[in-house]
Length: 168
Image 1 (cartoon, helix red, strand yellow):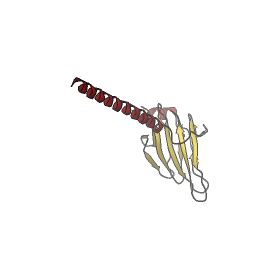
Image 2 (cartoon, one colour):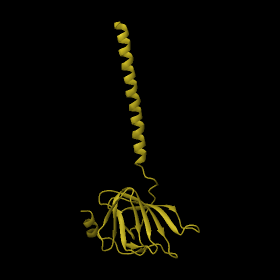
Image 3 (cartoon, rainbow, N blue to C red):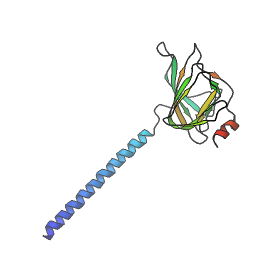
Image 4 (tube, rainbow, N blue to C red):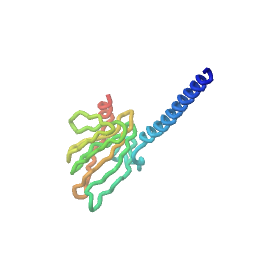
């Protein structure tokens, strides 16, 4: 009787050990999936000019304007503290935030905090800026419409004072 009980106990312990091992294996797979989900959708791209951006910002062109599409599409990466200068778009712009946190601000209005999953629909000819927070990077897809040959009018830089104010 004792031998049967010992065999049953041993089998039970082996079954539990196997279940723990399988769970551990699945957790490693889940961790790998989580790490994959934290990578950017697109490559960082080329550094953008400090004539129009403060800090380090990068553009990966996704789709250039062509005969079928009267817009440009790109993924823009803003390192912490990076931002556009004030600017307008003659036919508007749409931003889809894919990573991190940042700000969008229209001239004369309070800044709006934006984060992954947010969509910003920017009306035509509205003076605005957008970029990362002081401490976190932000990536967005920008769909920028054309009017004739123009899709943006660049204005003055966002001052450090203006940027500090929204980061309080």
